[in-house]
Each structure stands twice: as structure tokens, then as C-alpha cells.
Image (cartoon, rainbow, N blue to C red; front, side, top):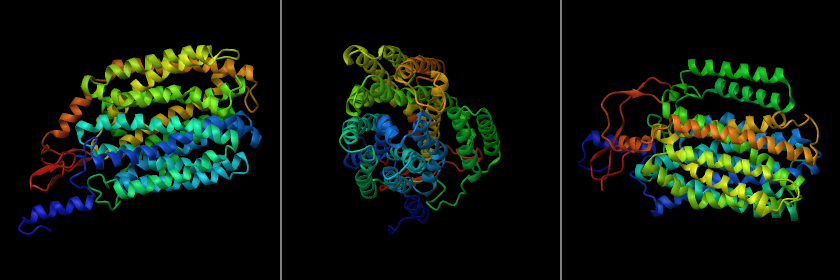
Length: 529
């Protein structure tokens, strides 16, 4: 306690400590030493999850042969993880807001590592799917935390740049994944793609504990006094599971039951005092529009990335390493251009990048319809991959920045959780619907010729969905959304009460803290120079 300060100011200083907020919260600059460590920790953490997803898709042919499973079994290996991730990622964001974003992030990374070990030792496809479901729980804890930590830690002027760098640097792990994972699958076993997560997770935990500042949503005090929406979490998970099973197994009554459960989920969330999905946040038009764009774009991505590794290996005879390397240009373009796309969106607004990017992606997918047995990589695969990667790099950072800019920084965890859930649900439903779209016979193996034909049909459908995302962005996204968000964060706190992000009820005015100079500032405002 500083001698001589008024009691009110001392109370405010204590509040900073209780909430876990320091003068760095909302004030870290891009390129500073502490900011770099925060970026490294969040990139590595989210990179573990994205690395695993990339390599698992490459391992599907060998995994299916080793465990004697059919196409539906391969779908469950992917959708089992996505199902638990999509169902619980909202809970993960809320837990981070209430109990500490760094703390929940660390727990998620450790959980993910343990589940990865179980995946690696699974003796059959049933056990592997169960372990993948557990892995998704860990992903639900760590994934929203990575973005929420960036949003809560960096200066408003640097957030879009930090998010762009996070997207681009995340591409490093995705780029390394096909080399390392494909090599492990070739020379050892698909099981090693899960074992490799263990040392990576240990590094992430160390970086997070030593270097990442803690932050909470205002009003929780780090105590987690607010209850969790257990009925909402269960209904959401069961509803998505029912629809997923209905699509994969062609069991329409199960799918209808899942849809009914999701309707009940919405009713429960509307009536809950502390909902898992605070539906009031969708009153913000920019937030809703950006999430609709996310839904259709990531649906297209999910279907394409599930199939392309299978097609290249089963139909074109690529090895796992060759199939992984075939899509490396996508990650290279993401690494080179994502931060620039984020900075460009901050300068000119996200509307143009979010419109042009999906259209370029769709054109790339249509070019990929040239992928078939007998074509060379340079003429049949590379042109579509390059165009698709260019569009993806143009889209991702502006889209993510727009979603987070439309939400209150104090609830960045739940905002990123909603966006991640929407993205995963899009991919989950798309992968589940592949046999219906492609015309594959349920419950059996898919011959190579049928796989290629179905892949082409899925590419056209995915291009249509992603094009719809670009049109929606042009019609609904404002060019000023990022500039307005930054201006509002730098403005003096308003005296009136504002809507609570979680429940829609009135919340106290913005909390004012005292920095080292004794000047008052908002939690999300930078300290005085």
C-alpha cells in the first residue's frame, strides 16, 4: 500500500491486484519484450490444436487401415474432437473470464496433452474417438483463451496487428506439421502424431506461467462466484451430437431429435440468469454478421480439408509427407500475409478484405476440381492451392478482429468462444454431411474413383458456401467497425450503466483504475505515458 494515498485510491489499487489486472493489461505494445512472450505463448498454445487437426487429417488413410474402420469411423475421429470442442468452447471462454484466462488456458493445454497420450495408445477406433472427445475438451479450454489473452493484454491500436501475427505465426506450426507428422506416419506410426504434443504442451505451460499476465472479466474478482450453465452445456452438446450422428449414420430421427434439443437449448439460454450462450450479444449487428460469415466460410474449409488428404493419398498415390507438403503454400501465404491483412483491415476497414478474400478462396476451390488421377502437382493441385491460400490469408485476420471488436474487451473470452464455436459447428456439420453431399454409400468404404468424384461435388458446394460468406460481408459489415471500436476504447468512461454482456441486465459503469502516476483510467485504456 502506498503511504499518503487517499483510501479510495488505495481501494482502487487493491482492485487491480484482485482482478489480476496490472498496468500492462490493455497496454502491451506489439514488439515489446513482454508483448512478444505473450504472443509466443498464445501462438504455441493454439498451434498445438491446429497442428493436431492438420496432421490427423493426413493420418486418416493409415489410421483407417490400422484400426480396420470404414469412412464413417474416419468421420468420427475428426467430428468427435470437433463435437466436444464446439459444445464446450463457450464454457471455456466463460471460465477464462471468471477464473482467469491464463489459468484456464494452462489447464486446457495440460488436459489436451493427457488426452493426446490416450489417443496415441488407443487400441481400436472406439477408444480413439473417446480420447478425441476428451482432447476436444482440452481444446475448448485453451482455444478461446489464446485470443482472449491477446485482446485483454494488447493496446487497442495494436490488437488487430497482434491478432494478424497470431494468425500468421500459427501458420508456422501448421507448416511444420505436414513435414513432421507425415514423416512420423511414414517411418513410425500415426500414433506419434499424438505423442509429439506432450513436449510442445510442456513448453506452452512454462511460457504461460512465467510470462503471460493474468486477466479476468470485471466483477468476478478472480473468484468465479458466478455459476456455470450446466443445462445449457448439456443440451448444446447433446443437440450437436444428435445432428452429427444423424448426418453420418443417415439416421433422420436422431438428427431431428438433435435439432429439437437445440431448440430447447435456445429456450433455456433465453431464460437462464447466466447463460452459456448469452443470446443478447447477437443484438449487435456487426457481431452477428461476422459470425454468420464465419459459419459458412468454415463449413467450406472443414469439408475441403477433411477430404483433400484422403484424395491425394488414396486416389493419387501421394505419401503422407507428399500430401502434407502439397498444401504447404496455404500456410506459407498465411504466414506471409495474415499480419498485413490485419493491419490493412485496421486502416481501410474489414469490409473489403472480408468480401474479396472469400471470393478468391471460392475461385481456388473451383480450380481444385482439376485434381484427379494422372494430373501433375504443378498443373492440377498447385494453382488452386495458391489461390485458395491467398483468399484465406486475406480473410482470417480481418474476420477475427471484427468479431472481437464488436464485443466488450472485458468479455473477450466469451466473444472469442462464440466465434470459435460457430466456426467449429460449421466444420462439424459440413464434415458430417459429406457423404450426403458427395453421394457416398453410408457405412462402407469409398472406392478411389468415387472418392474423387465426390470430392469435386464437395468442392463446388464449398465454393458456393464461401461465396455466400463474401456476399454477406459486403452487405452487412461496416468499414468503420474496427476504427469505431478503437475510438470507443480510448474514450473516457461513460457515466451511464451499460448492458451486461453475459445476461443482458444492467451492469455497473466502466471500472476506473489508478495507474502509477495516480491518474484514473479505464481497465481497457493504456496507462498514462
